[in-house]
Image 1 (cartoon, rainbow, N blue to C red):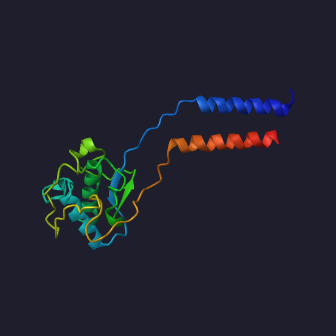
Image 2 (cartoon, rainbow, N blue to C red):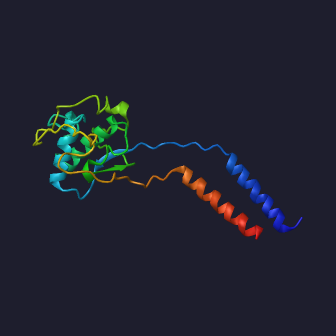
Image 3 (cartoon, one colour):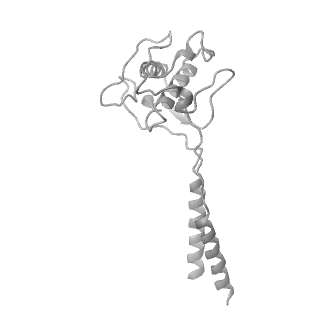
Length: 189
């Protein structure tokens, strides 16, 4: 048997091992935070919306564990994440007209713990409307019909934002399989 045929058998054996290997996909926790560069008006409107649409905004009240730092991006991030987690991290629930983005980096700090799942967020945004709006908000807007409660009123809709830095483990398996297939094609010809 020639060297080319032996190489081909080794490659086919490797592909069979890769193909039969059990792949376990572990979903990483995700959080929804304020997008850097979002305008103050957009953040405030989105914060008001999130608190009025079911986010737990008590922790960002003056007596809450997440009040400090008392900044609009910090308060909006907590409210956005609470709404996102209560919505079971549904696609589009971390958009807020482009004011928010999904991240795989835990934004918790000090004694302020951001929820990382629906169970740690307590309840669901769809079933638990909240009237705990922060004291610095100017309006408490309910979800608009047809929008699904995912964008603040007056800001329209936009394409959901995702932080793609946590690529799927299946991607590397797919890439290695493609490389092996290309090598196989090269050896055959």
